[in-house]
Length: 341
Image (cartoon, rainbow, N blue to C red; front, side, top):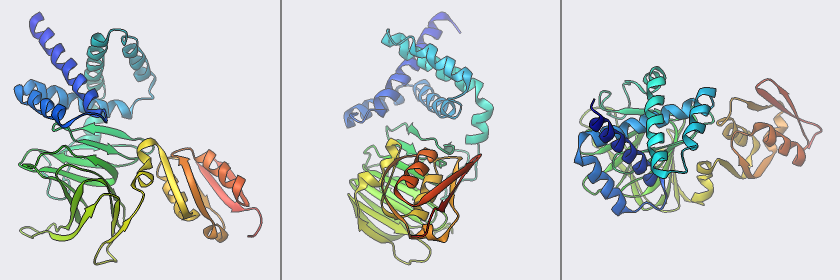
């Protein structure tokens, strides 16, 4: 590569990093997202640089606590006095991390059969480990925020924007594009949106959708070919839909959406929640697992906001407010009643 070619590539990488930072900003406007799409369409190298940066960011988060990665991060941050050099350092660091972590990235985000009709060759997989959260900016400016222990498949190869939530929970901030519907499939349910913000959670027994802004349609879909989706509900802001195999029609209720999606900021919110359910929710965010030893624990209910992943502090709080004793051994915390209720 010539010096001129190298300079041009460096400029493209710097621009990709700049767009990534802007698109992640909550103040990013529709006009800016449109300019980003135009920049991607100017040259294949632009889109390739941005996609490469997104893959690198995901890989970087998975090894962020390794000593080598901390040293690289510190070196990049030392360049922040010169904003332009800082952006180029970030892009260069991302490329280096992508190369170093290539085996990990291929293992974690490589080919998959997918679900919900996605094409394994076209789809890109993103995942988080237990306790991780990550943001993914797509090439249209839409943003996916993955919660702990979650996985999504993204397929933008056709006329529709197809997302499959394979596991866990994700928040979707959809860039407006009436010509390309944004569809999220979770289990046998599909959420269809144009420009809106919503949360989808998939577990073994149910699909949960929380709508923060705009409107979405929820449909029942089948893996069988040539079947037509069945409309289940039209949701508006502040509504929560829960659908499970036990209920033929989904249950839609009004909720405080900000509290229900507090996980975005690293918190878990409970309101008169049975302690047994609260333990299950807290255990999603940590390798340290809390369990109850006595049946009496099921009678306790908890209200409050807690930092996700801080299991020891959560157990200490329970001991402060309830007649509970917590005993830790390795990655297990066992709760028992200190005296009957």
